[in-house]
Length: 193
Image (cartoon, rainbow, N blue to C red; front, side, top):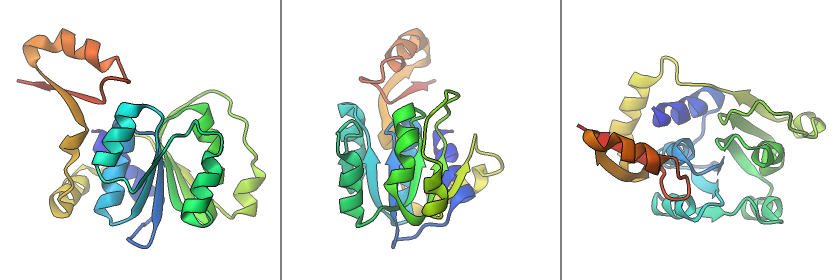
């Protein structure tokens, strides 16, 4: 399910190809699945993630660049690496700092997809949307995209099982849920029957 959410985030927002640089803010389940989609589409990728486990997982899944979003100069780092900003940026973390910076991570004429959900008030400079001619869209869930997402996985040879950090038998479900509550130690916990 996290993969289809990420896949829908791309399909509903923009069409990317190997000429594009995609920035993904957040390296949890959906962020790493977004990385898999971008790599499957042949894009250059930048992942912003502050937790070491998740940052290492992004690197092992082929992220071209992994940056710490808590670095004071992360916006400048992204601008320098991309020579002006990413073509498409996907927000998957749903945290205020990430939401606020998305407008600075993309180039003029770029696109932003918001997947991470946050109902708090986040202060942003709305004029950046117009001055940079940004295309912005939020998505939730993965409606009517499952069959296409499965075909993409089969044809692109993307291996999303790499996001699995732990596997438990169904009889150990309680222990599995306790592990899953620790985002610094677990990314995707899988129950096996």
